[in-house]
Image (cartoon, rainbow, N blue to C red; front, side, top):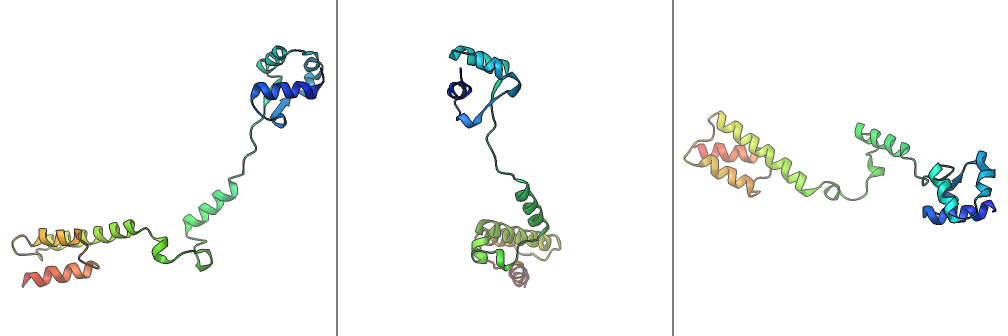
Length: 147
């Protein structure tokens, strides 16, 4: 049988396009001998006819770019789309702010600057409620409450 006919049969069996069917060029006479679909299946089992891999995009350039970005390159004004607020996740900003404020409050407590009954807990809840803009405001509140 003709090779292109066998290729078509093999493509049907392997469930791929004809361009993805590979036939061993050294075994061409053996391939031509096959007549039935069962013969083609046997050739596939023997590895004379195989399915080619899909052509994939190379990731090498993407990896290099990612490495450069990790180092802090490629982040200039020309690469930016969207405002600063759009680029920064709101939740992550909030988490950073709250953690720093809580750390400050803890330090103040250790230095015995937060005095008064239940003052620590009150300020802690205010931090959770997004009452303060930054660490300095927490310090002011703690020192102001001390008087």
